[in-house]
Length: 119
Image (cartoon, rainbow, N blue to C red; front, side, top):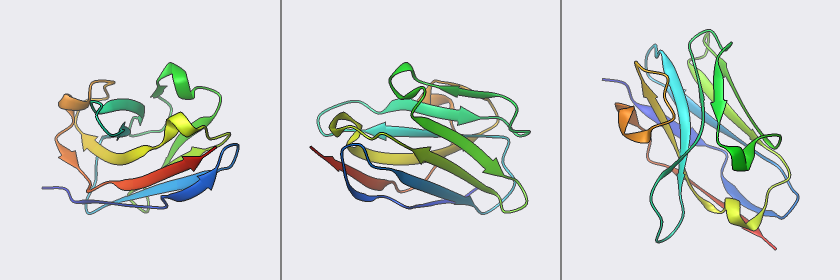
């Protein structure tokens, strides 16, 4: 069982930046971030494999968000730049054995951290 704890969410103005962190209680293979806005389904944002050489991100965040990891700290990061009001959501960290863009394929989830972008 892997436990995940997110941090770094908050309120930011449009155009601003935030960095989310997710610490894992143990070694993980693939890690990712998903988000869920009110009234919407949870959607994939970005994912990264064990070595960090393989990354995926959804089209709406490409060029703005960067996922990275520090395996020595069992931590994954999501650097979010040029934030837009439509990025407002609860952001969840996920971990699993498969590197995927499908949220349901991740076995472990954090509690989520709120990101609010004001216009």
